[in-house]
Length: 171
Ligand SMILES: CC(C)(COP(=O)(O)OP(=O)(O)OC[C@H]1O[C@@H](n2cnc3c(N)ncnc32)[C@H](O)[C@@H]1OP(=O)(O)O)[C@@H](O)C(=O)NCCC(=O)NCCS
Image (cartoon, rainbow, N blue to C red):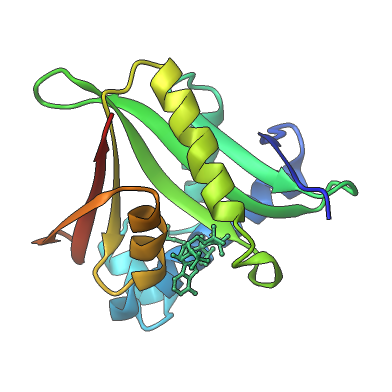
């Protein structure tokens, strides 16, 4: 099946809503402490409602430092997404920051997340990134494996809203 990567169509409400829903699903799946309960998530993430998450994600589509890339098939069906940004650290170094990604279950383990990761790295490099950074819950071994496979160093665990590892690759 031919799958292509493109930027999100922010004028397509179905596409945006699907991304928001999948982002929320990912958070619930990724943080075992939430026990798959949106109310528990809301106690920790104040804006964990559909409309607030949508506002946050839509805001990103207007900012050139953020990018939302989707994977779609020839019929336009959205099979996954990846959201990432370009930021400055405390020492004023520019770095690429991975926020979230999701691949539909029936399309997993076919290299799609890897393709999206590599495309994100290319864009971050063009934007001047000196390193790439992601964070993940200590129990999200799938994501740790994904980033390890692409040469990222795993450090931690650290503690914030939940225990997490930092995944970093220097260019
Ligand atoms: C994590 C996720 C994005 C991976 O997407 P994917 O397209 O299946 O990943 P790829 O096919 O590119 O896999 C690349 C590597 O990641 C690792 N990986 C992916 N899925 C894995 C799994 N189920 N178990 C262990 N390692 C896994 C492997 O190292 C894999 O390489 P390999 O296939 O050669 O072993 C996908 O499973 C997903 O969307 N999960 C739900 C949402 C989520 O957890 N998002 C991350 C938090 S933001």
